[in-house]
Length: 301
Image 1 (cartoon, rainbow, N blue to C red):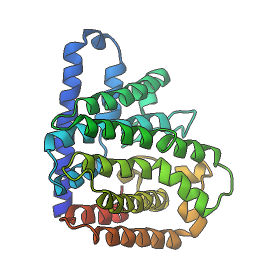
Image 2 (image 1 turned 30 degrees about the vertical axis):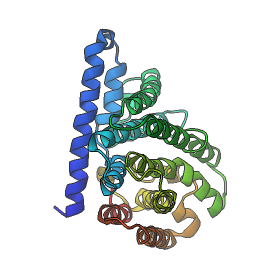
Image 3 (image 1 turned 90 degrees about the vertical axis):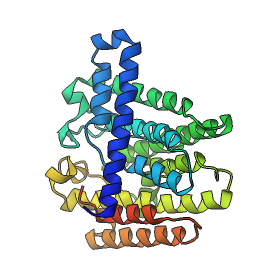
Image 4 (image 1 turned 120 degrees about the horizontal axis):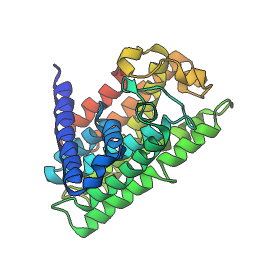
């Protein structure tokens, strides 16, 4: 197994164990949860697979900057809970109407539509509850964590991107408009993940460091979406965990549609190089962040 694959697997194991413990705590203090499907639907959406790229970014950034690992656990768990909520809602019939997620039936099919909506809502609240409990941080740092994640997941970030994406279906849009969608829909949470790790560190007041890290994150955020669009054409359903060609079926604007498949691949490479150039400006060991950038543009799932 390659070093990066080992690192990613370690993050997956660590964050999954942490999240399971958080759910155990919920169950032990809330007996009524045993009589409702809500908690099981939350677990289904959050624990059933996933690459854990966002938690990896939290840990990679925080560890690079000497953050406390317990603090990083809470931040990584919070952003993955937000990501899971967004996927549950994104799959709903009113949005993308998908049947598969991570190789399993989507939450609204495994349970029902109302339970899926509530599971997404509850995961969003769960994320901010965990952030409020983050240990070894000042009140200023905790507030900054909440603010960054709230901005990235709401009308200034992910939700805006999802809304723009929906209203752009069956329309011709420009490359600039497409990038606006994905800087918000996909890129905002990836950038937030890096910022959460940064805020947990002793260097959280270093603005020039924050700017370089943000530019790196913005580049890999777009690259992540470009590669997603490429995999929607070239990927295998067994690897990507959802139907191939779903974007084409919905007549969505994608990078291959606007740039051609080879143009989209070149776009991903250009963004990769931009990300690496930003890391060159950072006076810390950026090995893990470099490996993540490479993983994003070479992944098959």
